[in-house]
Image (cartoon, rainbow, N blue to C red; front, side, top):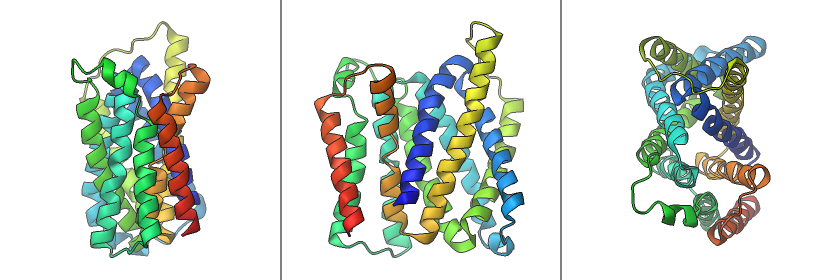
Length: 286
């Protein structure tokens, strides 16, 4: 569970900061900068840790195409966060966890006891409710929220990519498999950064531009650390349990809105927090 919490913490900060940076320099620049910085940082960790890379060949054929899924997922995620509203995007993204959990049970043969299965379901459901502001949803019922299609696409892509990453970490080790995947992502985003022309950054001056670029670089670090915690957890524990705990990451943007933006959570969000606490308690006791 501790690795799932680590993943939730890293991904929560990454999403919160991505929404801020993306609205200043664009989602395209944000995702390219963050992914390049994250891949470089992970490469330095690999150089220092010097893990065994002998088993990497057995999963490379899956990780390379999976990198395309992950790259597309990040692009959809950051564009969805740029367009917003977060009240719609966040709960949809939290539902990504359903796919790895189901695939882990069906393909990896993971067996959950009754209390574990209940804990997984309650935790994921609570994460979705916690990040859902019903009042904001009602205000936008007349039109489809701009970020919704991108959030749905990101959720599906991340769900599949997360499962493949979890499986690869069990087969070849969490650090070699993640490193190879991030190198593939680095190539994809480097090419995309050269080919795709994103809109000009909407910033006031050079100081704000430098600040937004630094924030995008920080996103790459925390996102990489969150993913590192996730794949390590899936290597030593159950994919379904680690994934369910990691799905609580939208709580951080919600808490950030309360603390920084003085937002007032709705009744469903309080109920979602209670569900998350109860679900995690069930997982911890089972």
